[in-house]
Image 1: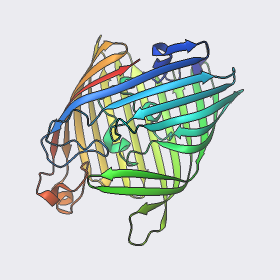
Image 2: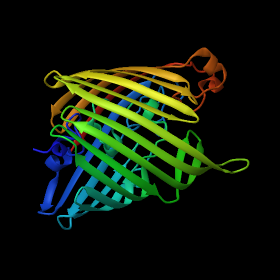
Image 3: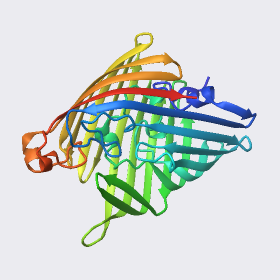
Length: 350
């Protein structure tokens, strides 16, 4: 059997939707996913872009609900639509996270429409909590782009089995101009992108995957005293490896204003998976964190995470009004530079 059949075996990939999907007809299916949590920290300064968890018990800071529809128009032509109520969205105003047409020709796949930015290991299923071990993807890396996850444009991907045990996938993508908005406390920032162009590559086997990503971004940030276009080149490298009941993951992201990384280890014992994560952010944010958690798989489609995360900043960064993992500098309000975050998370797919 071809290795391409197994290129996502190291993780529970988005292919779960094929098993959990509601089959409306032979060529049309609907699937869904969601996450919700009880979360609280011991610091009044909000943590994490778009989630803003503080010392008040929060029941909706992590709430995500998504619906996906897939239509096989022909054997080669497919359409897919995914609508997601993300943590930052109101229930009445969800976001279209992807909406594209895909055409398969030999080893090539062509896509056009709204697509996921392929920079990280879990980019394709970032909002599907059931597809990864942690309560949240490590924020050191996954907050580095201010929470932006999609682009409107075109992509072409090439996939090839290079042996009986390995496959390679390479893709090029180009995004048209788009305005991305993000709220940081009471402030709203706008990133007006003129273009995004990039490449991603994966080497996959039965129990491993290596991912390389690059994005070239031309954008203007608003508000600004003198708005001017900037260029940002983003580089990412990640890998995951499964051995027996162990799973290891690590990623690094770097650009001219920051460098961020994490390492993660998990051990599966029947329905339980304890895990540890350590991460660091440098230059722009200056912070590090240690996470310990336990995932319990109630069924193949429902899981529960109990998680503690310690988030730390050194004194010199605190005195320089660094934000770290917070939305605003904690020194502005006289709050402590560190935080302890507690989360109970429920994930499901259908």
